[in-house]
Image (cartoon, rainbow, N blue to C red; front, top):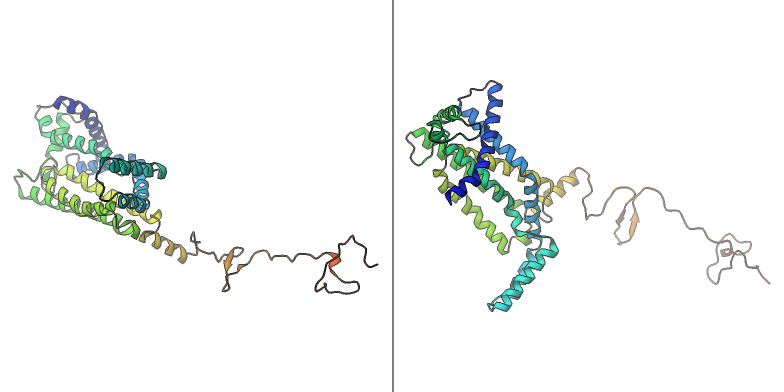
Length: 343
């Protein structure tokens, strides 16, 4: 099993090693010290940028999936209320069938929201194994990983950031500087995770979508994820914590942009977008326009043109006037222009 896991992860480790090494060479070329922890730390940040840019299509799918889940949540609640208290196999099967049918007709895939996390997991483990193996490669106990040869691994192993090596962990740390750096990174990682989740909950979810099992699950995750990262972070090398922190910052900024520009309908972010459009004089979809040439309602409820081309009066037929008179007949049948006038 271990050999299979290693064979699956090795190509990912190889890609991670080459991207890190490429950025390291680029930063060195512009004058940064090759053995500096900042150079290697920025190389890890470069790895984040490349990977997250490649995952943008999956992120868009995640946003669309989350939005659809919010929109169909009232229908899901109806299905759950319909079968509430029914535990027999037939009822459970019908509930599952109706739920899956709702997903199908609405084009919703609840698992799409997990795609970016699942896609990042191999990269995360690949980076963890590269950083964790630096010392073994530097000592000659492990084969090189792509461009990470014995000399490069030794250089990366000795690189320090605020007095802490990138491969150091909080657990088993021998210096105070290593503990301080790891604790700061763990706090930053947890705060950015909490902020990203809270931003999604408070700004991009309509009020109708906040009282359902999906929203309650999101609220639980809001507090569990930062706590999980804080507990597990003590076992990760500093380089992995840097990767995690930069990834969270990317997610937070990317989500802020999407929520601001394409908010979920009915959410606080959607109302803020409409207000910004009103201040700029841009029409808000669903509202009566006041632009010239469009139709709005007056106080009586009648539709009136506000400007543009004036509506021309309809011309009356010639037979609608009395002989010798300039006014139309008040009542009675009106003669056709081709009919004889009088007998």
